[in-house]
Image (cartoon, rainbow, N blue to C red; front, side, top):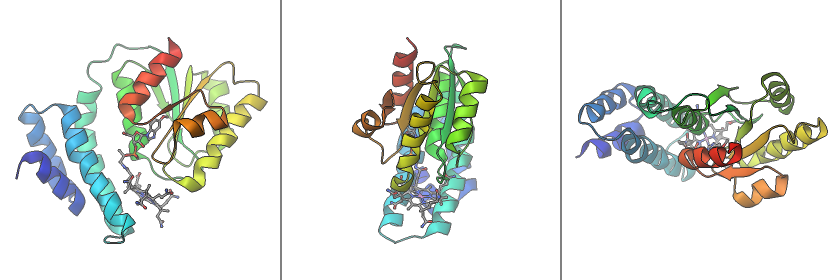
Amino acid sequence: MDILSALVAELERGDDEKVAELTRRAIAQNLAPRDILDHGLIAGMNVVGEKFRTREIFLPDVLLAAKAMYAGMDLLKPLLAKDGVPTRGRVVLGTVQGDLHDIGKQLVGIMLRGAGFEVIDLGHDVAPARFVAAVKELQPAVLGLSTLLTTTMPVMRKVVALLKEEGLAGHVKTIVGGAPVSAEFAREIGADTYGYDAANAVERVSALVS
Ligand code: B1M
C-alpha cells in the first residue's frame, strides 16, 4: 500500500499516532504538503463522512478520525504556511453559532496565512453578535463564515444582515463556505463571495482585497 492510501486507512481507523507517523514519513519522502493533505487526510475524512452518513460508523468514530486529522494537520501547518508574504490584509474567521465543525475552517485559515493574510480565528459556535463585535474591534478587510450543517446556514444570513444593520457592510467584505453552502446561497443572503475549498477561499479573498 502506498503511503497516501495508508494515511487514508489510518485516518479512517482514527489512529492519531499512526497518522502522525505516516504524515512525518510522507514529508520526509518529499511529497508535496498539498498532496498529503488532499489525497491523504482530506480523502480519509471523506471516507469517514460517507460511512457516517450510511451509518456504518458512529459519532465516537468520527471524533477519533477528527483527532487523527488534527495530528496530521499540525505537522503540515508550518509547511502549508511557509511561502507566505506577510500582511496582505486582515481576515476574521469563524464557524457560525450552533456548529462545532472546525477542521475545514482551520484549513482555510492555514491557507490564508500561507498566502500572506493575517488571520484571526474566532473558533466555532460563534454568535452573530460576536462576529459583529470582532469586525468593529479588529476592522478586518474580510470576514469569513464557515458552516458544515444545513441547520446552521440561516445563521450566516443573520450575520450578514446584522453587519448591514450596524452599517458595517461597506467596511468589511464577507466570504461564506462549507460543504452545504453554494455560490447561489451566498448571493441570496447578500454575502460578497463564496469559497468551495481552502485554496479557492484564498483566491476569493485575494480578489476581494485587490
Ligand atoms: Co459532523 N456532520 N456532525 N461531525 N461531520 C457532517 C458535516 C455531515 C455531512 C456527516 C454526514 O451526515 N455525512 C453531517 C451534516 C449533514 C448536514 O447538515 N448537511 C454531520 C452531522 C449531522 C453532525 C452532527 C449533527 C451529528 C450528530 O450529533 N448526530 C453533529 C453536529 C454537532 C454540531 O456541530 N452542533 C456532528 C459532529 C461532528 C464531530 C464533532 C464528531 C466532528 C467535527 C470535529 C471537528 O471539526 N473538530 C464531525 C465531522 C468530522 C464530520 C465530517 C465527517 C467531516 C467534516 C470535516 O472535517 N471534513 C462531515 C462529513 C463530511 O464532510 N464528509 C460531517 C474535512 C474538511 C477538510 O472539509 O469541513 O468540508 P470541510 O471544509 C472544506 C470545505 O467545506 C471548505 O474548505 C474546507 C477545506 O477544503 N470550507 C470553506 C469550509 N469552511 C469554509 C469557509 C470558507 C471557504 C471554504 O470561507 C470562509
